[in-house]
Image (cartoon, rainbow, N blue to C red; front, side, top):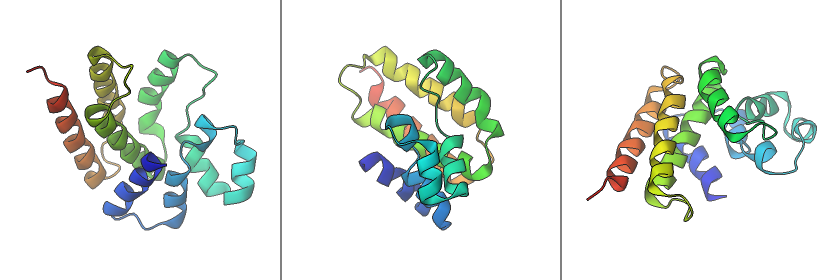
Length: 149
């Protein structure tokens, strides 16, 4: 729940006030990480919220490497509001990798994640300057935290 709240907070801090975008941000991991079906999401929250959530949802039936490749490939094609959610999500994730990474992630995996997140965000540049700047700040802090010495 903390991650979801953080993503919404980042959007609000960047000036997003659209309730449907904020709802989609709060629900962005629902389909990917739970058994909640896209149709149920659509029925409960409407087409726009569901479309935004689905736009940022990975297909968990694919291998991890393919999912990651597709995120890089599809980032520039997402609708602007989905790009904004993705920017906030990546900034939040990068902060966690730098400050409180999963215990079973070796340093090489943490650094690889930061590099990959930067690749995804490269395709999101132009969607929201404030969110991109927040991502850049989090990435810099995470890289510094993981630097040897």
